[in-house]
Length: 79
Image (cartoon, rainbow, N blue to C red; front, side, top):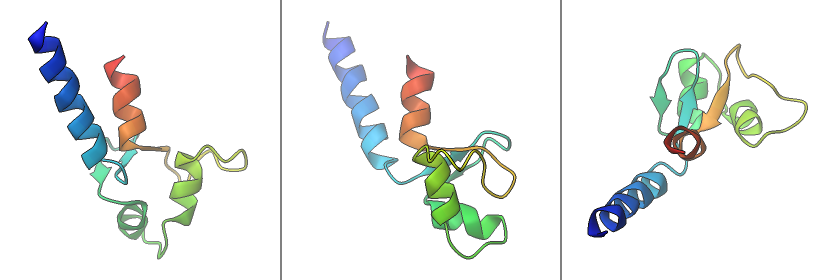
């Protein structure tokens, strides 16, 4: 029982630490922020990546890639 509690605490710490991090599905890369990911794609701002991560209906991809907030990706992957 205590193992499940400690596992839950570890997962919570990971999720809170990755709150602003983004994950690229195609490259499997993790970036500290949408802005950092955008710069890696040759763009100046991370707004388009943020829109994808926030599920904006007009945005399926940004810069040719699919993105998710890392915390959301981890929650899905851990279920």
